[in-house]
Image (cartoon, rainbow, N blue to C red; front, side):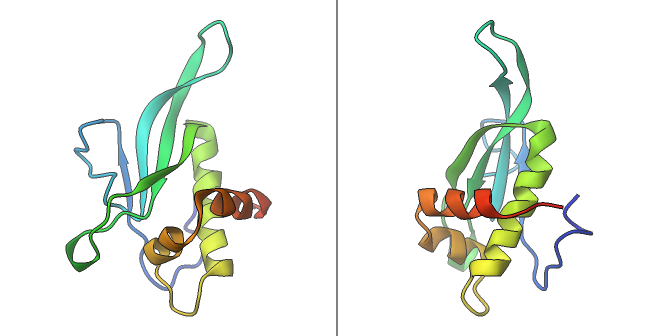
Length: 120
């Protein structure tokens, strides 16, 4: 989804898993998506979805990602990731990596910027 819509000069690691034991290491990705059931209504109907985490890293840049968005429907996740990447590209300091950008931002501020970002 994002490839043709967001031009990246450097890679952003996106880790996707359905395993809450971190088998795909969603906690150390720049963006981590962990599978979840998302409630649709009070009757208990659910759909596939994710919790979205940001700011992880490994090696010399080790960090545990923090949850930014909870209960994102799977059908909405690609657009949300697109908007998150565009937010980073539009608001980062010169040369600032994605993880560094998300770590310096307050979660509510970052959510507001993402919400204001148009998607294609």
